Length: 150
Length: 128
Image (cartoon, rainbow over all chains, first blue to last red; front, side, top):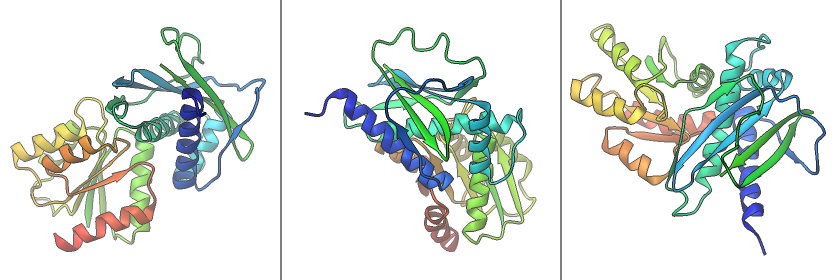
């Protein structure tokens, strides 16, 4: 029997793969098991409101964020280029939107916020949410994490 | 041809512009706005300065979102007759119907390919 956790994770894997294949022309695979450390100081956040209330967080290292920005733009980026934060925000936006689009009614009747990006790490997020799905992904050796919290 | 791209993400504006060029559109100028209000101001300032051929707009944006932009554009009678294509992560039917009712002629969901942009945009340009 497929439970709520498995369904949410399957939808998330599918949304991540779709975004990477379509927009970055790269494959991106989930990492099974625990990942020791993701130096995830850059955090993008999308909020869900309506039938589903919660948030989607995407966190990545500076290096992974830079590679992501380069892949989206097709041009090199500087370490503190604002386009790097912008790219991570947009990546989170598309993943959250893709995840939402795979929900069935009535859960699909929800809205997503614009992305907010910080460089303060994950501390302080998700505290008010009860259910949490966390998943790590890798593309070409670059690792990032996604958390769905409700 | 001249196009206006409205998205709060500068990265996405560049990605959309690249997709338009990959679709074979010969863009002489690409105007950009990061929200609906900036887009309205751009349209006001560019009235009479050469025909705009296409508007592509996100929906979720701060200050003024894409649906509010469509309504305000209609009220101010700005760039009427210029096809508007929404490019957004909001793919559910409610948003699509609201966008079409407010004057959008096309709808593309993010993530998208250059081929999808071409397939939605070219027929609108031919019909305009």
